[in-house]
Image (tube, rainbow, N blue to C red; front, side, top):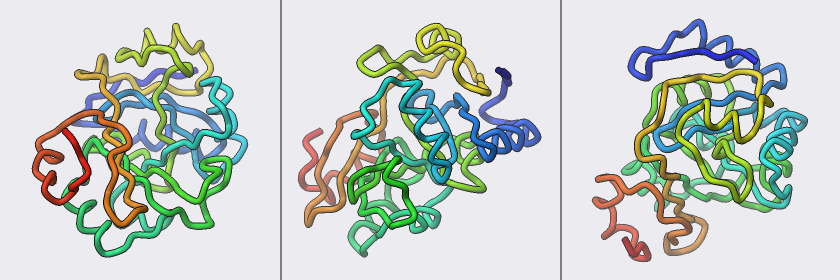
Length: 211
């Protein structure tokens, strides 16, 4: 297992590319986002995705969310209508996971349903890691165990089971993303997570959100 210390403001591109190569070859990484540390794998590598479930001891019937580099990349894996696009454009990048109708390119190992959760975090390192292909984004913890903010503590919980760690130190806040389902006529709040100024600013656009 490799551990890369990295500056969130000035990421080492050579190390980022090495992390991408590891995922491209079926590896798993531990990486920071704008909310919590996540477990990353190439979503198009079914064996790597199944390994994520094993690491987390997660029920395979529960979907994993996907992280993409930017707003336009979302359309590679999900369908966006006009209303969804308007809300997403106001919120991203940011601490949100939007549930959308998935495209066939997304494996049932990533999401066994017709939907998929998609993120574009406000975090440079995470977006760079998804520059060649979408990656999984799921909190780096055992199922039903506490989500921790420091890579050393995370590894004590899950074990030395990843191939690479990108360590930026402890993440402040340590709250998961806010999850909004956009597959219905009206947006629906699924999880009330990290609350930023952005989500406060769209309350009038997302009538169902009770924040």
